[in-house]
Amino acid sequence: METSIPQRLSDLRRMMKQAGVDACIVPASDPHLSEYIASHWKNREWISGFTGSAGTVVVTESKAGLWTDSRYFLQAGGELFGSGIKLFKAGLPKTPSINEWLISELKPGSRIGFDDNLFALAETEKMIETFGKKKIRVDGTFNPFPEIWNDRPGLPDNRLIVYPEKYAGKSVDEKISEIKHGLTKVDANCILLTALDEIAWAFNIRGSDVRANPVVFAFGFISDNEIRLFVSSGKLTDESRSYLSSQQIQVSGYDDIKNYLSRLDENSRILIDKNKVNAALFNCISKQCGVIFEPSPVALLKSVKNPVEIDGFRNAMIKDGVALVRFFRRLENDLGKEPITEMDIADRLIDARKQQELYVGESFATIAGFGEHGAIVHYSANEETNLEIKPDGFLLIDSGAQYFDGTTDITRTVALSELSPQQKKDFTLVMKGHIAIATCRFPQGTRGSQIDVLARKALWDNGLNYTHGTGHGVGHFLNVHEGPQNIRMEENPTQLCPGMVISNEPGIYRTGEYGIRCENLILVIEKEETDFGRFYAFETLTLFPFDQKAIDKACLTSDEITWINQYHQMVYTRLSPYLSEEEKNWLKEKTSAI
Image (cartoon, rainbow, N blue to C red):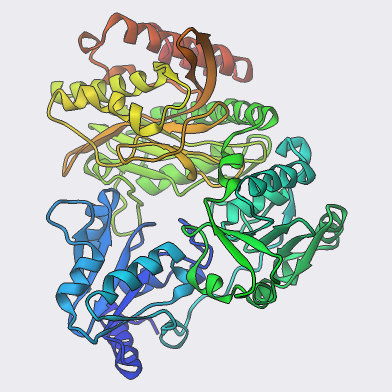
């Protein structure tokens, strides 16, 4: 029988009282500290009803709160209604952090409970230090969910698949050699891999254990002497076993990782990324071996795509562009003639994309926000919120696909009727920011935070802003969100390097009215070398036109108009060979010079 959120909170508080725990922290995480997680690990969603990917719940004897970022403020406000959980809007000046709030709520001698399998070592150490100063104890062994979540889904048992070198572009041997070289630089001789996309990349394997993320639940260990994959035997087939053996990858059970770490000898110097290894795993490492705390070298290696991967991205963009032409042409034809809802949009996009070669599935759940729903940055339609699309205002569609040769992520905001001057101006200001990123050149050594302002200047000049990042890294037939590269206001030491794929997605959101976002994927490329150094630029990969009906040409410079026209000409040139005559005519109109 389905239990209510208040009842679940009551059950949690009962367990807290029995364990002598005064506050419980429930993150949206798994033992691999993934952004998107399998149903088995959705403790935070189950206890709160909030379905966003980012957010943490804290429960005390009499209070409960959810901390989430600006992408989810509107969504969380709706989903938490009636739950007894207060929304804390993280990042706003007046919002206390979780640690600050707990210190204000708890007395010295109190105990905070959490499952340290779900917390990064760095985060756990910070909590121990912060709360210790206030004489508040922390207990990382508190995990009540196996007892109170009666119908909890089991762990994913999907099969591991081999990712052929013809798509990966590099052999496992080449990748392991590069990883070992990175270890040598910091005087380490082994590394524990826990991030699922890093494991998939390093071993040229993929899976389907997390929706839209082609990863497999496993741990990896690489040393001078061995390569080992910790994975449940039920995920392996004769083919994958043979493949792993041929790559000299030894196999152990998924649950054997802790015991294995406890047996490392004094000659081991293991690299641990404090932000990627959970505290429970770290605590299992043998005290005999040396520990070197450094960022995982795999993240940066994975982020710089090789020529085969880059060609795969370009192929995927053509297929995605063709699918989008067919989707939007059909939508334009059907709108007003038959009922179409936000949820229908997602289904229609899948139908269009799955006709393309090497299509695997979505790269994330489609965001289709009509009217005021477009202002909810990571909106996800459900049966209660599902609006029918009308020929009025804006429709924002953020979607993407996983193809065996690449990953796509595109947002288009389209006008469904005549727009107001404000709507057109807002759209054009967003486009000005998008073009500023797409056309910028920057010297070697530049970080994403140094160019983020280019996307915002036109908005700032008009007293407008958006609170999410401008760009995130994108994996190659891997997670649509990957690091370490990004473009955002917050400082990130990672330099932008040729071969990195990043999104370019400024936006503007007017609560209760509409949202606008314009997103393409871009590739960092070498541009030129001068007396002042080496300079890089971006190549736009995504192939689909922006809605010219929403553009106020008077707000654009001649250079911006030239960029739009050249981009649209490129879209037509690359997509038209794969289209019917009717589709070509439709696209030709959408890409005509403004």
